[in-house]
Length: 127
Image 1 (cartoon, helix red, strand yellow):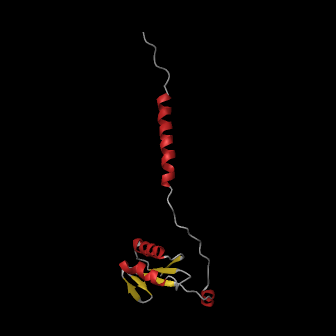
Image 2 (image 1 turned 180 degrees about the horizontal axis):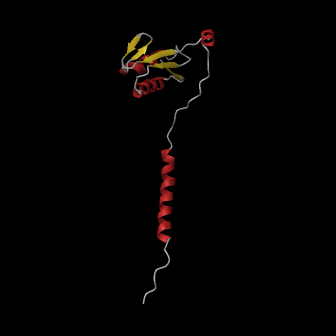
Image 3 (image 1 turned 180 degrees about the vertical axis):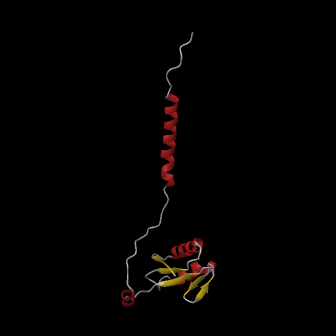
């Protein structure tokens, strides 16, 4: 008569866990993605802002995803060129004013174009 099997052999289970651990150790450094460096904005009153001599480029993203630099409409394909041509004049950065119904993708496209054009400081405000 055969003896009943009373113990579980955990050697194969341990081998599988070690292989999974090694795979995770190899893949984990590859998953490190670069994020955005964000600074928490300071509260500035309108009076303080009027006293400052700031040079900020202003863009508006409308609810129908159009881009305006001041009162001039800018085509989506020309955003980077327009920003790059005047990035040195606006040393204090870019202010993006966004209407409530604007799509997130339109705002991100403007931010990417500004970053690619060399703009280092980008702020977002709602309208």
